[in-house]
Length: 278
Image (cartoon, rainbow, N blue to C red):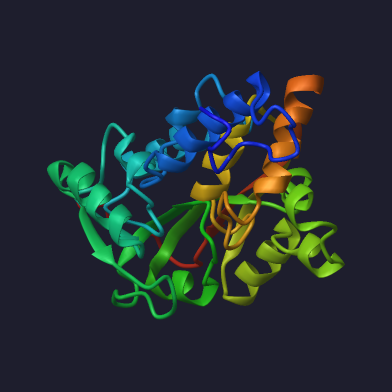
């Protein structure tokens, strides 16, 4: 990198420094890499996050192996669903973002699962009582009435969701203090109330806060580009000053530490479970 780079620090009288060069290299790389799908392996060695104790993917796979008809809502690139060793005879996934639809289709069609383009708004494009299992990992919005509608009597909704104030240390670094209303969003107790209001029986509800470390500024850029609702409208150009300041903070003080929030919710639709298809 040279002092003429758009990412160089104009306040540096030399026009360039080792730190500025590292900043430009890390940011340009993270700003160019694809963020399609829901695979975060690009962050290996750049960021760390504790995992919830309940092991969602394994628990989801166990339920899929016992289901006859399953729906995965907001599947992303299909990576989590595809990780299950056994899929039900009828397996459907929904997704709204076209690059993810293509990625999920390529990943799930060979497994016999159908991918349906859906706007992530009611109604779900399925008949009443169509599935005995509905799963969703980190849905943006949970439409409880629709989940209750497409579940067969005795069917189950099983989901890991983002909880309150998740990674807000990083969000507030860029946006400043958030409102009490924003801090109260995604409360697991509200999820329980909404599930019950839709006629479901909540059988499990657990929440945890987990340590997250961003080891370099490239990890921050990639994360904010991929998880677009954290800092809406994020671009490197729009937040260049904050990014440069955070880069120097990481270099001088070590990893930027935040805390993610996750909760697990399982809810059952009252009634007699459907007869398995196999």
